[in-house]
Amino acid sequence: MSETPSVDELDALSTEDLRRRAFALAESKRDVGFFWDLVKHLRVSRDIATEDTSSGSLTGSVADAIDAVRELTTGGFNESEEPLIRARLIDYIRTGD
Image 1 (cartoon, rainbow, N blue to C red):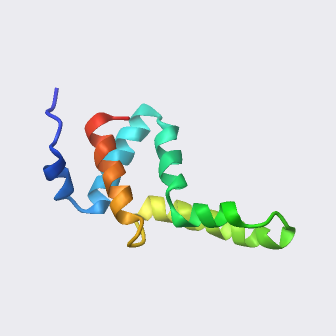
Image 2 (tube, helix red, strand yellow):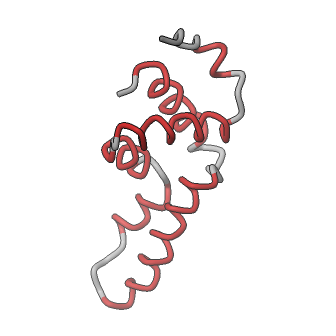
């Protein structure tokens, strides 16, 4: 059994390394809730939630959803999101939940 890395050890890693580690763990556990939790904290998901339901906003919603997936898969988080996302990734790696 491997030793759980410390917060300081994990904090020294790049956001991309943290993302890869946390995603691998979540994928191995089939933990969809982890991914959903991350999506809820992204700016683009908040933008989608505040759009009206007219058909005119459909194109924007699809584009915003694609942006959310892109942010998750590439680690392209904005400055205000990154500290929260890093904290969540570190917590997930350390506790697995």
